[in-house]
Image 1 (cartoon, one colour):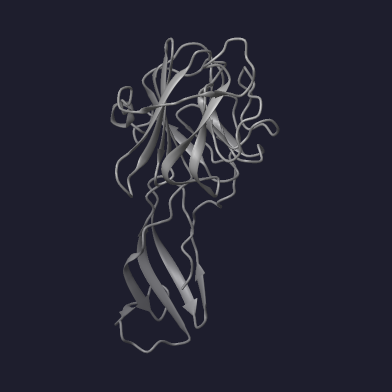
Image 2 (cartoon, one colour):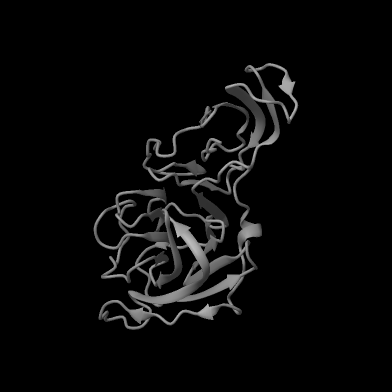
Length: 281
């Protein structure tokens, strides 16, 4: 049978007609191509993307976006304290330009690669793969090749004296990895869901900060907000799209749109299959 490709349009409901001949199958769908990229604007808000990989975002301003009160999980007393090791010899001491390698608790897929641990960085972001080198004190643009890539920036800024906690919550297949950063008037959170969703949460914000995601090459990424555009009580969901659910109500016919044949009929060289496919996006 043919492969049902990944759709990314929210609320897509459709009838797919599968024309199959012996030894081959063809699927026709009106969905967008996976690699198509939408024009990027200077300020992302409410919805954005996809980038070249397929990531999109939607925030709590949208009726079907994430709800801040539902997503925020308080780990201030239950989470494990992050013991930051300094990336550089900074005059400000502990909490400045530091990172710590911590376990996620489950495999998490990011830009096509799976990770079981990440580096939590003092400057409001996490990084996958190799450790950080010399993180810029001030946030850069997303995406931007060179420097440190393969990152999720919740509120990327030059934080000094950061405290952070992390925890893995829930049971499979609904586990989530949570990181909470606190500094002065900032209380922000990152949640990595086992299904691949990335949720950024802003209980309170102060000062600048850049939010977005970037792949391991630094060439592909998606920016939610440039500096000074983040607001309190906001939730943002990044996602790469889910495959459609299995088709239901499959019927077979001798001609397109023709009457259905019984299950045990002997097929001609060509048979048409009709069914309903629901796309969770």
